[in-house]
Image (cartoon, rainbow, N blue to C red):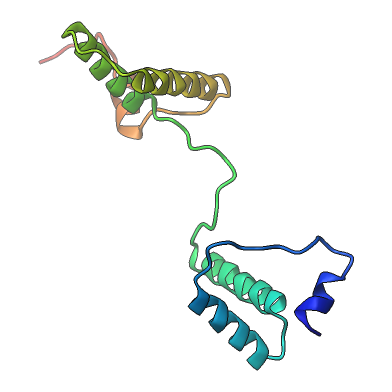
Amino acid sequence: MSDEEDKSSSGPGPWTIRDVPHDIRSIALKLAKKEKMTTAQWLERTIREKVKSDRQKGTALATTSKPVINLTSAGVVLDMMERLHRMGVEMPESMKKQALTLIRACMNDVKQGKDNVLPTQREVIQEPVDSPTE
């Protein structure tokens, strides 16, 4: 079965991967031919083997969820920006937009009930405020 026959199948149309170096293409073509496979079949098998290997090693291939923004770290960043502003340092628009994005992300995480406080910070928060000192 050739790559041309593969294109006429009922599946998705042809797929192109741009900017693959010529030497890598040649290697893929030679290895596929050596194993009597189309390049697409060889590439699919090779990628599946890599994914399986990574899963067995516990390596995360990709994440579908957004990372949780740590509220403590976000607070430190915003405090720093506020101090710079009070000192008369003009914030670039891009930094202002990033700060708003950070605030929105934190607010969304809190709305969704995500726990965004570091364990060490949680210990500080949970300590009684009125505890007598010796």
